[in-house]
Length: 129
Image 1 (tube, rainbow, N blue to C red):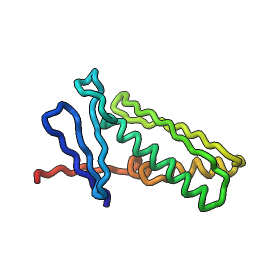
Image 2 (cartoon, helix red, strand yellow):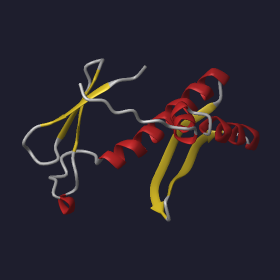
Image 3 (cartoon, one colour):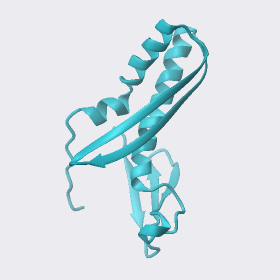
Image 4 (cartoon, rainbow, N blue to C red):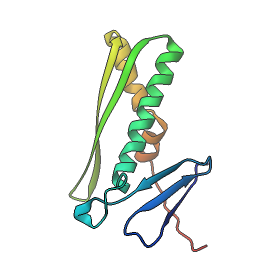
């Protein structure tokens, strides 16, 4: 199970996020929303999780297969329209890859763990501690 602790003090919208492994990142809102833009916005963090997972999954798969994937890039946009949330993911794969390998890597990207989480039923349970 993955877990984090997020906390905010009196500084507007600056949130410190700590992982159980001791990593720390800062989230904030953009200036036009009252923040100071000191870190990624919450929506940017969500999109970042998909991008990071996609790239890591592609790297692991290509390495396991011995394929010459030099670089995998994921550009992801989040749009919200008419009650629907949509992630638009564009992949750029660099290296000596044939069409069959590129097609397989596309399927692998669609099977990364965060992609699976986002495309399956999600329940958010909130309790007071």
